[in-house]
Image 1: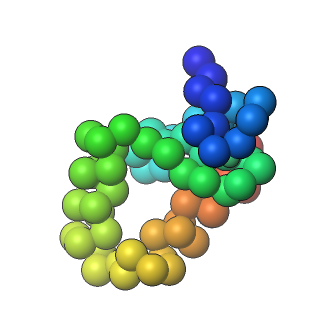
Image 2: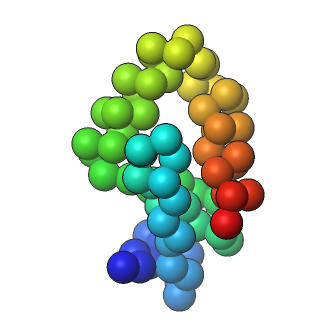
Amino acid sequence: MSIPCPRCDGVNLLPCDRDGLEIDFCPKCDGVWFDRGELDKLIGRVVREGLRPDGQPVAALLDCLEVD
Ligand SMILES: [Zn+2]
């Protein structure tokens, strides 16, 4: 299943599973997209793990890009 990036023309988002959290990221603009349920889960993780939304979670997501 590929979802086109809402921002880039002709670029499909790549699915990524991060600790049970399903996200889609764009290899072109580095945008990360996910549905509301997944967003809620991510926010829950951020709060629970004490990560600030302005750096650490992004680093965690970038980390998952290197898996594949
Ligand atoms: Zn994009």
